[in-house]
Each structure stands twice: as C-alpha cells, then as structure tokens.
Amino acid sequence: MKMNDQVIRIEGVSKTFGKGDREVVALNEVDLAFRDGEFAVLIGPSGCGKSTLLYLMAGFESPTTGQILLDGNEIRRPGPDRGFVFQDYALFPWKTVLGNVMFGLRRTGASHADAKRIAMDHIRMVHLQGFEHAYPHTLSGGMKQRVGIARALAYDPKVLLMDEPFGALDAQTRKLMQQEMVSIWEAARKTVVFVTHSVIEAVYLADRIVVMTARPGSVKGIVDVDVPRPRKYTEEHYLHIREAVLSLLEEEVAKSAEVQA
Amino acid sequence: MNGQTQAPSTKHAPWKDRLIHAGQFVLPFLVIAAVWELIVRVGWVSATALPPPSAILQRAWELCTGEGLLWHHLGQSMVRLSIGYALAMGAGLVFGTILAMNRVLREMFSPVLSLLISVPTIAWVPVFLITLGLGDRTVIAAVFLGGFFAIAYNTIRGIEMVDVNRIRAAQTMGARGIRLFSAVLLPGSSVSVLTGLRLGIGYSWRALVGGEMLSAMVRWGIGKMIYQARFWNDVTVMFVGLMVIGLTGFLLDRLLIRWLERATIERWGMVTER
Image 1 (cartoon, rainbow over the protein chains, first blue to last red):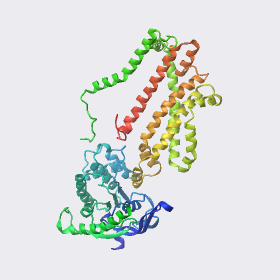
Image 2: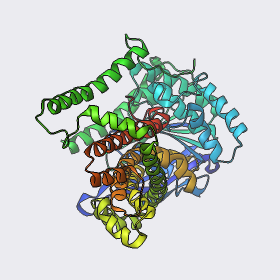
Image 3: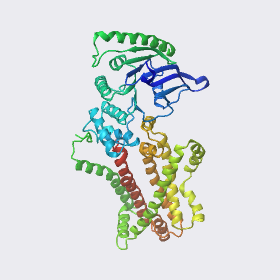
C-alpha cells in the first residue's frame, strides 16, 4: 500500500477508560490504515472496542496514546471532513428531512439555495423524494437511517464513518439497506469505515474486513474480499471468505465469553 | 404524499368528540356547584360565610357589566404578569443556558439555586416592599422571581439532557458555539424548557396575587380586589376573585403553553400527542 493512498492512518493507538481499579483498556496498540475510496468493515466480538475506534476517528474521544491522521493531519475533534452515521440515527427531530440533510451544507458555508439543491440530490439518492418536508418521527427506522446517510454525505466529507448503522433495523429492511448501501457507495465513491457484528453484512459490503480481538481490542487479522459487485449473499465462490472471517472471530468470541463468564 | 401521518381517527366526528370532552370537563364543576348550592339553601352553612354559586355568578356578572370593575382589576394584573413573566423568561433562559454550558459556574451556583428555589416567592415580598417600594415594582419583582427559578432550573436540566449523539452529529457537521446552541441545544432541550415555562407561569401568577395583596400602593389587580373585599366583609367578591384567579391560571396554561407545545415538541414528535 502506497502512503499517499492512505486517507486514515491509525498509529499505535490505545484507549483506556476510567482510573485505578476501574481502569478498562478498550484498545491496545492499534495500527491500521484505510485506503482512499475503499469500503472497510470493522468486525469483532462485542466489547472489542470497534465502536471506540470509530469514535476516535470521528474525534468524539481522544486516544490515550498514539495518534490518528486524516490526510496527514492529526484528528483532535469532530469536523466536516468526516461524516458519521449513528446506530440510533441521531436525527434532529425539530428539523424536516430536508432541514436535516441541509444542516451540514449550511454549516460548511453553502448558500441556502445551493444547500437545498444539493440536499435534494442526496434525498433522491436515498429514495426519499416526496418525504423532504416530513419530520423524522413520522418515518420508519429504515427511512430514518436513509436520512442519516444522506445527511452525512451531503456536505461531501472525505470519509464516511458508520457505527452499526443497520443494527436497529428488522432483517428485511436491513438486507435492503445493505444493497442500497453498495449503490450509494459506488455513486459517492467515499472511503467508508463501517462497524458491524454481522459477518454476512461484512462480507456482502466490504473490500476489506478488519477482524478485531476481544478486549483489549487490537487487529487480529485483515481479510480481503476481492469479489466483484453486485454480490449475492449465497454465492459459493466467496463463502470461503465468510468462513475465514468466522474462524478468526470464533476464537475471539470464545475468549470474550470466558472473560464474561 | 407528504409523509405526514394523520392522528388516528376515532369513530365519532371531531365536533362530537370535542363536545364529549367539554362535557367531561364541565360535569365535575356542575356537580360541585349543585351540592354547594344545596347545602347553603338547606341552611347547613350560612350564606354570608359561604355564598352559594348562584350569588357568586350574579356578583361576577355585576362586576363585569356596568363600570366593568372586574376587567379593570384583571387588566392591571395581566400587565404586571406580562412584564414580570417576560423578564423571568428572558433571564431564566439566559442564566440557565450559561450555567448549563459552563461546568465551573454550574458547580458554583447550583447549591445556591437549589436553596433559593425552595423559598416561597411571597416570603420575598416584605423585602421588596422596603427596597422597591409599595407599588408596581414590588409586584413585578415577585412575578419575576416566581417564574425565574423554575425556568432557569429546567433550562439547565434540558440542556444537560440533550442526546449526546445529536450534539456529536452537529459538531461533525461543523456546528459550534452560538450555532450549536441555537440549532441543537435549544430545540433539543425544549421538552424540559417548556416544563419550566409552564411551572413558571403558574408560580408567577400565584406570586402576582400575593404581591398585589401586600403592596399598599397598588389599587387595582385581582389580588387587590379580594383583599379590599375584606373591608366590606364581602365574601362573595372574594369568591369571584378566587374563581377568576383559577380560571385565568388555567387559561394561561391552556392557551399559551399548550399552543407553544403544539407548535414545537408535539409537531416534532418529541412527546406523544395528547
């Protein structure tokens, strides 16, 4: 991997929560880089710190040691060079769909007219045309997350960080959203870092799957998924990739079960 | 298709629902009035100590018509309430916001606020009588203080409880400072702020009545009307005053606060519609 291909570099990052007896090491010496335009998935047993790592990239938390670079600049706080999609959507209920999607555009300096035009493009991209004046509470979970994705992409961030974005959706909606996520990513050509605990979701979406160890989290292994899209969930020639990810994971899940028992 | 969902319709027509609702509201009052009227008429209680509802309504009618004394009293009260409550709202929101945003100031002032919030506003009035005089300023100060603490306290709570992911989302999209406040923290805290405004107008209204009674230079006002009735031993006027105070307090809540709730937190789905 060439250095200038790397959008995000995670260098020797550890994260510790609490102090003294209550000290919990969430991440331990993580070294990782994400390439420009790739779809990367972080997967690991629950409590492995995959969401913490994403929060560090977002700037919601600071690493205890090490640093994270975005295009060579250290990440210190949240900012519009990143987009973030939350599991609980975190939409603004006091704004309409259009108002939510326009928010980042207005804050980053677009005029009202430009912001509206670009926001409408993104609302169409996630197939919510006709709902632009609806308030979020009138939408279903899947529709809310479409707004979340449109909102995070509209102001053209360099990377899109997604924290178990489809975790709260029912199985059917989840599958549909995964399929649409692929076409959205192909259209937007953004670097995506996507956290999930579903192997099926990871293998369906990712260019690369980063498998993390049980707590304290570090990189267990990286699995490349060089299967052309559109993929099928059941295609035999890449089921071995699913097996590879699962076997890496199972060791760690067993470990974290021992800790919790 | 505009994505707005309609409220679930019931089997009755809307006007019928409203009629039933109004009936349910009025009925208990009618029952109480009927029993009251009866026990006075039968002679169990003397009509001078407890005038019957019919006499109270008749007196209210007399006060409303002719010179319209009741309107004059009520009008003066409303002016004082508006000034005092507007000041309480402005100061309460600003003070609450500053404390919510600044941890050092909050830790410094929170104990003071908790202590002062439990002092009944009316207990301040004698102090105001000396410092602010016997007139309108004392009454307005009481109204202000009555509303201020409830509004400030609930503003702090509201801002502290804004969903952290909504703040993170806004920061990621480049919002900070005053923008973060006006676009996210203020609307995000609106459920609690409205609770503060509702409690505040109730406390302000109560403080107003007490303040008017204690301020010697105040001639008009609904509280004064009750107080003055003492000199003529006119219990009926006192009851007219009590009725008007109850009704006005109720209407302030229903018209002003409910209207605000409908326009904001109910429209946004932040509370379930009633």
